[in-house]
Length: 162
Image 1 (spheres, rainbow, N blue to C red):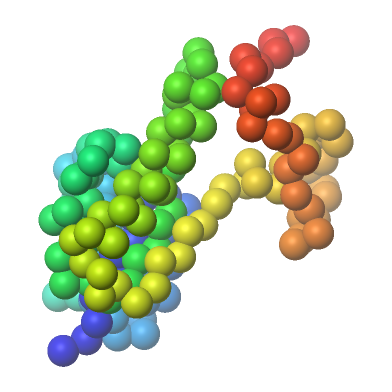
Image 2 (cartoon, helix red, strand yellow):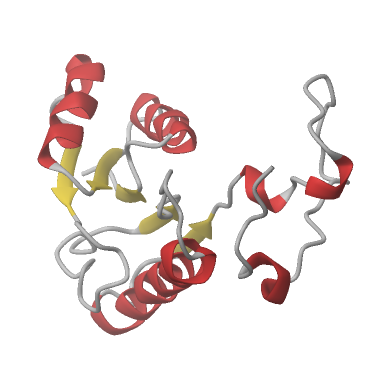
């Protein structure tokens, strides 16, 4: 039987590419999403893989135990989930802490509920390479040499509005 890989944040851009790569390689993929409507949308993108793809609802990745069911019988995890909020009133409470707690939660749940997981891959976002001090650079080509120099203390401060 093919291995099952859990892809968290399955409705995201990076996750869509990860899911397709695993499906075409013959793996079974279990994706986690926050909403049932997202699960239905994702399943409709891959009708030819309906037997290999399943989705689970994880409304809040930071809640202890949120991934318990999702991790049953998986051999690997690609963690792409992170909160995405357009109307941020508090950087630390709306973005930073939920992302940190979600990542720690998936790692802890693997350790306690499914220690047979062989690999956990944690992805990041464009925020990891974006240097706001450089301004908006629409033609700039980012590479592994780019890194966001912003410290946690700076990131937690409210955004300045122009």
